[in-house]
Length: 184
Image (cartoon, rainbow, N blue to C red; front, side):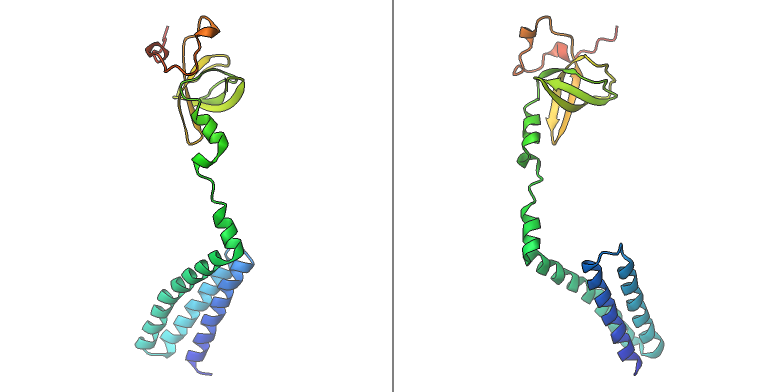
């Protein structure tokens, strides 16, 4: 058997190992084996062959492996399991009902249920929501107003306690006094 046949067999073993890694995930062990097969194949051609043969082998691997990977991914997406996984891509914020409800919290008044260090829980309209402050630490039971609610992130700011609960209008925009810091 000549060196080109040995090199070709090593490349084929490398391709089989890459395919086996897809079917039997081993944490990359088969990929390392495949890369070693490719390296030994090119090294064999470099040692026994001409510079032109080595250049063709390296160019073939450099172009052929990514092209084969592209074809494999395209074929996988056409399979039924690939279509099912791609169709389940509803992880955008507008598609998730819980995140849509969080967007309605902007401007609402609530109370901290836990100490905010600077994250914790806030109760808005009887519902407990995970929230963040703007960097301040707050104790439990402090009145807050939601100043930002988007992409699953709720940011609150401390406000003065309302004199009467009828003063709390959840649809009203924040007043300037709600944003003043009381440093006394």
